[in-house]
Length: 312
Image (cartoon, rainbow, N blue to C red; front, side, top):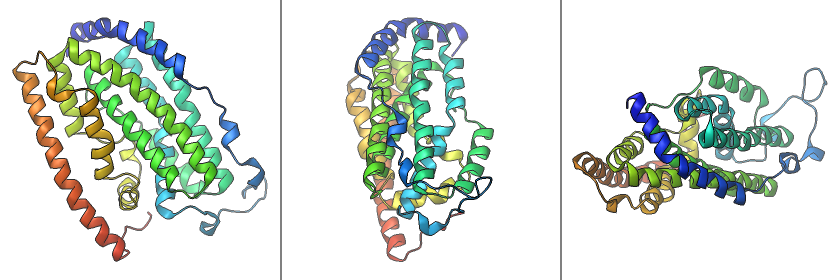
């Protein structure tokens, strides 16, 4: 996409951004992160305060939930990269810039409150967590595709995926406060998804071929933003086997809802490029269904034989 084409997309969609930002501000619920941290149950760690070093048996969370929390938290930690990516593509001025700053302010709550909760609960190794944070954030993150429409398509899918990952982590953590916290974060992610989905829905009407092509590219090549975390594959396998986030969850709670809500198979005005992209999406969804079925069998075998990968 040329600079002139990108500028055209931004200009055409700015009224949608203004409208959806107003809607978001009207329904967004400002909440206080410190109220979700069990401060009274916390204790000092080793180091300058001469507290007790973390021990694995101190965590009451199931191992797969610990892995999910680590992935979720480190994903949220990379907010500087996400803000930069959005700023480069959408700009810092007007409604686009206002949205990015508001979104960033809301997202910043997530990493801070998750880390405080994990430390207060002694839910995961704080030393490993900090070392992973340094590696992951120092490496940065960049979107694979360069166009505005690809960025909007990715944000639509990713926000929904993140919502589901947080929600399922909380549901399986066996900690009432943890479940409340993850539900609260998931509610934020849902509103963010609704914003991006609304903008992308308008993009499909104004730029049907280009937007459909972007959506096909993103769906067929989707990777979670935390996939670059050191040791991600082993943790993700345990998370998948536990049912927190796997191909079934991705298909049933992310891909299919996106296709339904955007009426992807009935978008009017498509030319040859758009219809080709539409066909790619159909074939991808069928392939994903087959892959999910195979994965269910694999995870059942791994669980039965306790053959899940060990933590790095």
